[in-house]
Image (cartoon, rainbow, N blue to C red; front, side, top):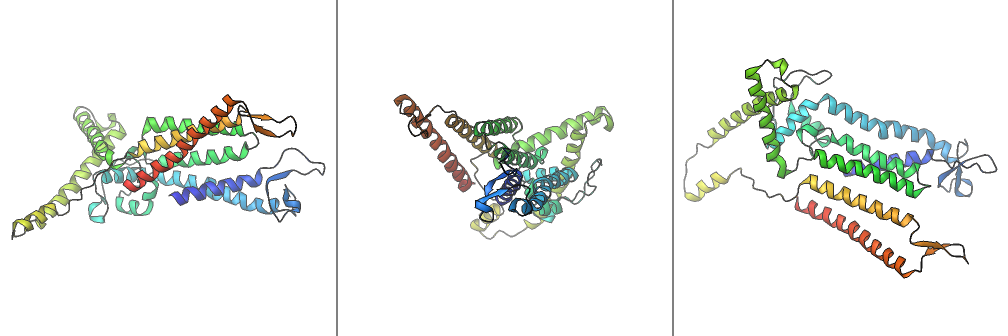
Length: 351
């Protein structure tokens, strides 16, 4: 996933960079690109000149934008919409520590058919093919990969379209990150190991509520989401009962000693400790990004610099109070940047 995110960001940035031309017309009537190349005269590439590199790269940039920057998110949206019920069911199985093998998966289940959705309900095939798109997220948030791609596309777009006005670019990025932070806090989409019990409990409550409503009214009067949870809960119960019967048959062994009995009791038990909630990790990292954007806006505000009257160049303000504030902001920025990297590595190693 990290490789996919990186390639998506780089392809989008490079494709948009090819179309980003200087709007100020030079004396020869051409506009010029922001990037430079040794293949261009003087290293500066003219826009829309058939003999120049920019015009030669434009078809490939269009292809990259259509196929990868736009096509890949549309492909993810289509898959998520078409297999949403199976993905949700598979995440419920994951919360119950099931679905890793075909014997622990659901091959067929009676669920009310939905418009433009897949009719098959085999979860094992969906997990093997598409689990990278949704396995991090809760059953009701299997679409959250789309939100991540939109965030990355927005940052790449702002960083290229508004690069001439860095303060405005950083403000747009800050606005986008703030919106992402609010959505993250509101939805908490990640299903980390410490939240599996809460996911199972919420699922059981919805199934129980649907069961109570079904005793008092017809199926048409029950919410489709609640009724789907009831049907999924019945399918998971049937699967668990079948697995328990198979395990009970394998337990009919002769106990030779106390050590042998202890091994049989502990067999199959995989005890793990998890210390981090992925939703908290995401909130901390987005908050660090927001803080770093604010620090960058401070540096671009001109508060710490002045124009040298002799050389005409920009230099650090010699005022002691300005320099002290500059040093403090720089230290805070370094602490946040290095601290976020260390925090992520600790989470990675612990999990």
